[in-house]
Structures are given as structure tokens and as C-alpha cells.
Length: 409
Image (tube, rainbow, N blue to C red; front, top):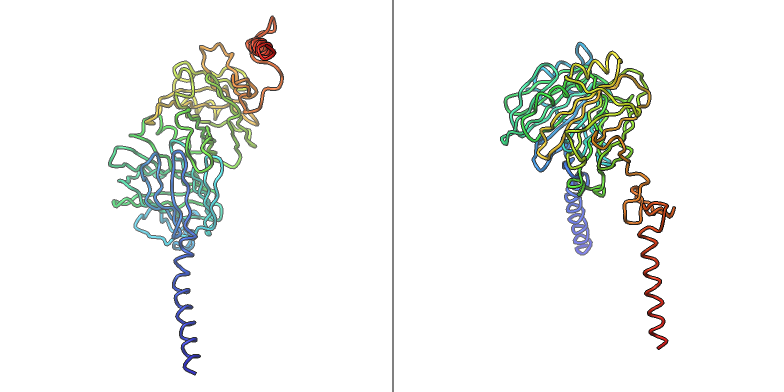
């Protein structure tokens, strides 16, 4: 009987130890994260934590919860106006899943909200209210101040700024202790953009385009210096952010003097596309020009003319503005007069329009610019005589004959 009691006691002790250790192991397994070329964050305890852009933590934590669970429904279908009261605290819905792809990470919450973090120099975040009205709450690393009904500006100790933007039906507010609270209706978004310094008037205009739905997409094209690192292999040179479900965009090819992209919308209404290009990715930022479907777009003098192109559909126009990024970059803001599928090209005007995309071109190393081996026999020389490849072959053949004759002696 004593032996049996000892055995039962030992089993009980082992069971208690296992039960105590299990929650810690489970919690550790649930913690995930993303580390890219520009952004990093972790997901744990129903929150996105330590959101980092360019090496600086800009958001300590971000939680999302359905408006109903945050206090019921009010007028306008965006909860009880929690966006106007930043003292409200939410528990946050559990993180349901996380995935990552090309220069992007996605987090799904059980409340139905979706978070998309984009690995680009502005660290753009989109939180979409896909499953009903949602409340978004962030604790930021800096001072937060309200700018109208739809924006909150965050200022860090180092002078860098970031902006929370409400897109669609909703409102947003900030408290004195760095807490930002937004409430958005179903289908609406909360967008966050980070800057290396104080945001410029040009960037504030871009924020307005995003807020009122005029901007359909942002494309970021990196230079060679910032194309390394990242959890997805590190060789992604472009990042694409779309702000409505009707739009898709991609950079199809690029060279030192030209960037080609396709922008497609299921709606015909014109929109604005913002392209941020690292100066190291182009030959000359001062001489950039824009072509839409192969035709030169007109250069605008103001953001008002860009908006007119998108809203009135008279002709495409573009602006080139210096970005506030610490890495030298330019913003090319393009108003496109109408859609379905449009071909957008940004090129060096001094190159005479003869810039060639990287796809299918010999890069001088025996491979095409798209990584495929050059098998068509074209080594870049003219067809009037043997090129350098043929001459090298003749020299190699002569050397082999000399070596053979030497061995026979």
C-alpha cells in the first residue's frame, strides 16, 4: 500500500508540473513576428507589439476589437463614438492567424479585422474593418495630436513623425499619454505612414488623397543599397500598397532609366497613384517624366491639378517631389484620368525615351535581366562580324592547339 501511495504521489506531482509548464509553452508558441528590410514587429497577447520602422520603435502596441464588444453600436454604425474618446480602453481581439509574402505581412484578428504591414521605407500599415465596425487602439512611442476628424500625427523625440489616417466612415482621437483610438465602419480603414523627419506639405497632401479615397495605390521602388535583408529572402525590390479592393498594381520591369508598372481597376473612375523611387534606382531624379500607355503625361504645377486629372478625367498629369526619407528618394504623384488597365512608365527624359526594361535583356553575365540564361546566341555585339564572345572562342581554340603540339614533342 505504501509503494502504491508513493507511485500515485509521484504521478500527481509530474502531472502538476506538466500542467504548470503547458501554458508557458503554449504562450511561447503563439508569439510570432516579422522582420523585413524596413519593418519589424511581434504578435502576442492579442496585440501587435514593438512596430519598428527603419530601426525605431514607433508603435509600442496595437489592438483591435469589434465595436459591439467595445461598447455597443451608436449612430453612424461605428460604435459609441469611441474614436472621440481616447480614454476608452479595449482588451483586443485575439490574433487568429499571421502570414507573410513579398514585402508584406498580414495579421488576422478574431473580430474580423485584417492588418497588413508593408515592408517599405514608410512602413505603411493598413487595418481594414472586414468583419463589421471595428475599434483600433495604439500606444505610440511619442506625442500624439489630433489633426481634424480623420488624422492623428505622432511626433517622436528624434523629430520623426508618423500619421494615423481614417479612410471611409469613422473618427479618430489622441490622448495626452500617447494613446490613439479610432473607430471605423465596416469596409473602412485605419492607415499608418511613418516618416524619417517632419512630414512635408507634399506628404500632407498625399495623406489627404489617401483619406478621401483619391489615392488608389502606392508603389515603392528600392535602390540596390536597400534591397538586402528581410525574412522573405531579401531580394524584393518593390512594395505595393493598394487602398481599395477595386485596384491592383505591380511593377512589371525596371532598369537604370525606366520603371514600368501596371495599374488595373474594376471601376472606370480616375485615381491617383503615388510612386516613391529611391534616387539610387534612377539615373537622374530631376529629369524624370511619366508615360501612360506609352503617351507622355503632362507635368502638373500643383496637387490641385493632379486631383483634377483623377476626378475630371481630362488628361493624365504628374508631379515630382522630394521625399522626406533619410535615404534620398523622390515621390512621383500621378493623376490618371480613367481606368480599366493602364500602363505606367517613369523614365529619364534625357535618355530619349529609349530606356529598356530589365526583362529579357542580357545583363552581360550570360543571363537575361530576368535571371534566365541567354540561349539565343545574342551576346550584344552587332551582326556585322564576330563579337567578343566569338573572338574569345578563337583564342581558346588556338591555345588548345598549341598545348596539344607541345605534348606531342
